[in-house]
Image: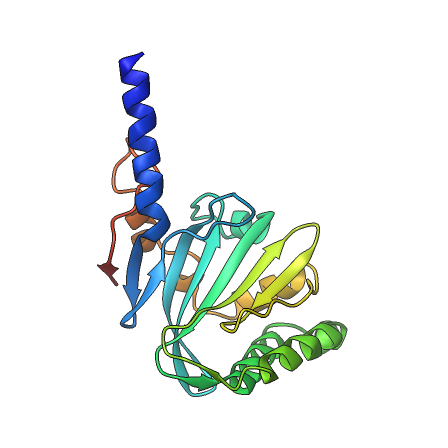
Length: 202
């Protein structure tokens, strides 16, 4: 019984640490876990990307770390975070996401996404500036679509299906979607899955 109580206490302690653990990507802190409706999502890949001439830290979160791209794309919940390393305009980021989708899909598919992309761009226009280190989140739920959240607290109604989210994700560098080096920070030992070490630099 004492061993079970100790194990439970340690698990609770690790969960508390992980909620605030982060790695450094491009000099900004990127959290290793992203709770979604009470379910922890774990960082699966991360890296610096260039969008509209601006450098951003980008990271993808999934319920369980995996090196399988098919498992990532079929996950019921996932989140993409974009964090400017220097301030950038909301309009610029909205246009950059639109360009990512346009680059990664056929003209016919892009035309089908245009209404949802227009809603997303309208939301980004409401944010004059996204500050350095501030997080923009695209969170996907399989039965709802993608919620877009910006630093001023605005969250738009869900848009699109999995194809729209995946079109954005696939246009990013592979290391952002799937990186063993990043995943190892979540699992420092086989005896403690999900236990993250704070402030590791990539």
